[in-house]
Image (cartoon, rainbow, N blue to C red; front, side, top):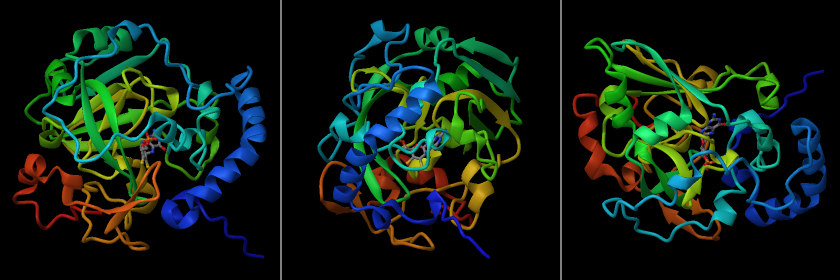
Length: 324
Ligand code: MTE
């Protein structure tokens, strides 16, 4: 007998679950999910969404950071109650209700390893790193490959500042970023068919573009676990899967790194993954997106509306599969 288990990435979220059904289902499942999470985390599940997670890290005094008005939005911010309850974080489950399970993520202490083609590899504690960096708030759009979107106020620092701290050598062409690997802390990592740990990568030119941002907070406070605490990438001109969460290793390489989704399904999720409404996913259109917290669909924009800042990065690379 052939049993085919459909995996999370095989259907677009927009086709999978209309929000009303999703919300009803969440109300129904709330109790069961909460119980499961409590046993995983070894403690009681947080009752209220979105307030779970380990927001109260040692750097809480740094928030809210001053907003950089250069990064403005063309749409309203998504309310936290929507963005913090509808997350992709496969380490904690393949549906969007990862919040209770992600309580198991321990973000203190947290060390980030910087290695590969750099002047001198080093490890740095998260708190030390954040206190060295120029923290600011930026309002960014976020467009998931599943055709939903949100707009959130990230706090963090330019990835370029970390690149400068790392001092890559002249041979370094790419930056690879990795999520932690800990099956005890992240039950999703027990699923053997995924190429854990979650890995993403950018070219050095992309990583040093002004828009590439390492987020440490959102909505004026440290990141809640479900957003990828304590450190996650935000590259708003690319599909959301490029924005790797809970980073604990940053490696400079000469070769293009193989990414998590590329390793799983290269024909559908490539290295570049720049947003383009005219290039459909093999199984669904990318022309429009559903805005989280609303029942609106709006047109998707090339480079998610950030073309002016990033289109130049791709001159001479037109033969590459830039948009998938
Ligand atoms: N990073 C890790 N480690 N694991 C994940 O499952 N999902 C990605 C990205 N980063 C993911 C991840 C996807 S598909 C998206 S759309 C965004 O995180 C979702 O970010 P959000 O939950 O903050 O909206």
